[in-house]
Image (cartoon, rainbow, N blue to C red; front, side, top):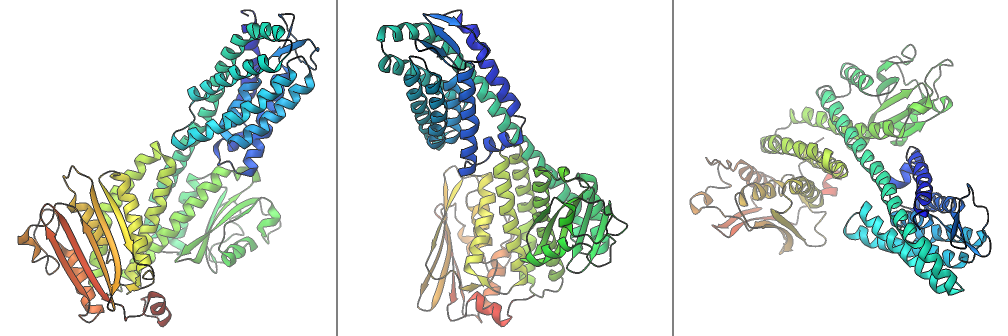
Length: 593
């Protein structure tokens, strides 16, 4: 038994070396990192089924209670058995991919073991299949409540190996021979397979951590680029601003050339092929025209796919991304490469993220231009209130999550994009649908609750059919923001905000109710009617909402505040349902453009 331990350790070393080499291969890393759809599951079955086969071939033959070392075990004598690391590969693959993957791996490794022969062949084949299924279900159960840790994997591997020993005793004849075999190989196989599983899981864990670090770096890089380019994109799509942006991207990415276009011409081109990709001239490539027409990201990995008219153009690969403003393609961002291999998955992800950020920046630029022409002073005052504190708090939250939870940081960044798009749309429109206003509120709440996940809960009670009713923008969102900022400050209990929309007698009734500290009676009478002097706020948002409602609905809209100290505040709004919906306003051109 003791002599078997170093031999088994050598076999585990072979599997670990192969696993380490696989960890450097892009395909293997991708199936470890990605959600396991059909393709990924099939690859897991093939890869870990291969580990099972290698374990069979590198097993140690056991004959008459003695171990016989061989470099490659092609067959087993009828009265012999083998000690190997097969269960290790089956267990890990099943934990990663689930019961279907475990069954596939078990069948591959088990059938192969059956054909090698030996008096334990059938028992080992059965145990391989059962181990795959059992480990798969255990991994699936574990993922519902926690992550599959290395030590959890070790415990599963040890249990599976013990079950295999039990199956050998039950399904192998003669029993005395099986019992002597288990006495010889049981403890070494349990110990060494457990140790091997631990090492293998550490390799997998390092792959996952490396991917998280990579995503965090990519997110930080995207933020850095966005920060550098924001002052220029705020000037809109023009040759001067686009040239500055292109130069920044050329320095901070691996691309050999950067180009930015509008719908008609190249506004800037920096880097290779500048001799014929000239700014202020027509579009030089058919690829750009295709992206402008379809509004989708297109990747080219061959020179022919770029459709450049210049025969000697050095650019061999490109990714062209649409720059969208209000869902319309206003231009393109192009990253060119001299060699297709340079267009890595990392560069594609970075480019896609930048295109989304740049689109938001362009919308911000257009909104700023539009805001100069707006006569609605109340909306502009609301904009001025919303942006500063919320923007900085959101960026601080996201920057922290970039290190601790990159995936959540990415989702919050998307929510921030939705929030600002809603802001920008509201600044240009007289009326929007209730559905859009709620989307604005939900984007705001996602970012706030990332900072204070247990401080309060928010409940929506929206009557079916009211989603398309038109209301002024910035009606609900400032009320929800006020409730969150003021109602629960210094509160030790979990608060609750309830947002309600219902219809009654030709009116749509909206309300925002909180269970916060309430408003003193002395301040309640003036709120919503005039600005007040307070350390916690001036009430300007409430004044703006009330005055806009009165102006748009000709004094037929209602605005009412109820509050009781220690119990909470309720702000109610009533709007005539006789006014047509948001889509109809759009069709009649009521929206400001």
